[in-house]
View 1 (spheres, rainbow over the protein chains, first blue to last red):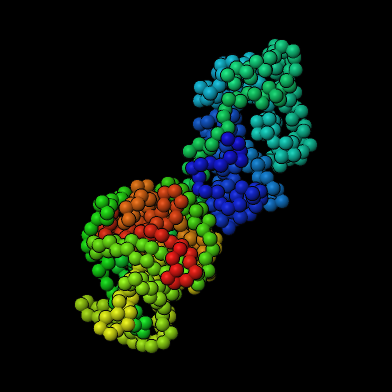
View 2: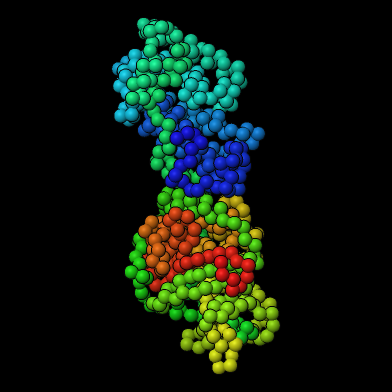
Length: 218
Length: 363
C-alpha cells in the first residue's frame, strides 16, 4: 500500500481522480465536497503512519481524521498553485499533534529509560525482535525528548514524514533556511546523544544494519 | 549510516497501511458535518408535498382530458412483499444523524455524481416491478428525463402520452369523499400542474380504449416539490441547498415532522426525475443529514433483490418510506413504503433503465 493506493472500501474514485493533481482535487471539492475524499485515500495512510510513530496508535485516529477535516474546511484557502497537498496535510497533522506533545515526549523518555516503546507495542507482532532490541533506540528517543518542539517537528517531518526541506518549510510556514538550521541543530543533538550513550559513532564500522534487515525480511 | 538514517529506522515497524476504520469513520462523519442540523431545528419547515402513495392520480383519456382524482387506494392492502419483505426498524423521528447514515449517503452521492449528464428531452427506458394493493405488476415505460412525455405499453402496443396535450378539453377531477368533483381547466393551468406529476420515473399504466373512448393513462400524481424546469436554479453549494430544502413552504404545514417532509421531498425528486448527476448527488448527501434517517443494510426491494435502504423517520401512523440502492453500485433500485416500519405495502423496483433514442425503442 502506497500513499497513492486505492482503498477498496471507499466510494468508487470519481472520474479523473487518479489523473488529477491535488490542487485539481481541491478545486473540484469546493463544489463537490465528497471529492475531497480523494485526498483522504491518497494521503491518510502516510499521515496515519507519521502520526502513529510520533504519538502512538491510540491518539492517532482522532488526529488523522481531524487533519483531513481541518484541511477540508480550509480548502477554500488552499493555494491552488501548490500541486501537492502533502506538505499542507503533514503540517496540519503536526500542528494538531501539538496537543499531544507532553505524552509524545513521555513516550520517548519511557523508551530511552526502559527500552519499552508503547508506540510500537501494538505492532510488535509485525516486527522482528532484533530490531526491537536494537540498542540505539534509547539514545535516539532521549534525544528526541530533549529537542525543542519546533526542532523535533522539523526533524520528524523530514525523516519520518519524508518531506523535503522545501516541503517542510511549506508545512510549517517557515523559511527553508530555518528548516536547514533546525535540522542541523537537531542532527547535532542526535549525534551527541548517540555518542554519549557509548554507541559507536554513526557511520562507524561496527553496525551491521544489513544483517538486521535480513532478519526483518525473513 | 548517519543519525538521520538511524532515526528513520526508529519505530519503522509502524506500518504504512490503510487509515483505520475509526479514523475513516470520523472523517466521513465530519465531512458534511452540517451546521444544517442545527439550522433545521431553528427553522420549522413548511412542506406542501405528502407521501407519494397518498397523493392523487392523473388520468389522461383520449389524450384530451386531464382528470385528477384523489386516491388512497395505493396504500390499501397491508401486505408483505415477496417472501415477506422486512426491513430494519428505524429510530423515532427527530433523532440525531448517525455517522453511518451520513457515510452511506456520502458513498451513494459519490456514485450518483458519476452518472452521465442527461438532457431534459432525452428518452429513458424503464422496466419496473410495482407492488400495489397486494399485487405485483410489471411494466415498461419510456419517459423523457424532464418528464414531460411518456410512452407505455398496453396489449403489445406502445402508446405515446403527452402529459399535457396541446389542445382539447382538459378536465381536472378531485375526489371529495365518495364523489368525484370535476372542472375544466385551461391548458396553462394544466401546464402548471404537469411538471409536478409522477410521470417521471414511472408509476403509471395505460388504459386500453373502452367503449369507443380513446386510450387512457393512469399514473400516480402528486406534487413534486421542485418542478423539473426549476432544477437548474437550485442552489449549487451544499449549505445553500440544505437551506433551500429547509425553507420550502406549503399549505399542509405541520402534517409531518420536518425531517419526514424533507425525506419525502428528496425521495420524490430522486424517484421522479432523471436529474443532473450533481444535483442527484447533492440530494443524497442531504438525505444523510436528515435527523432520524436510518440505514438498512439488508433492505429488499419488491423484486426481491437485496439492497441498502435509507429509511425515513416514522410517520405519525408508524409507517416509513425507504429509498433502496444497489449495494455494489449504489444506484437507485427502488423505493418502499412500509407499515409499522416492517411490512411493505407499496413499492417500486427498477428492473432495467437505459437511455434510448425514442419512445418504444428497446435498449
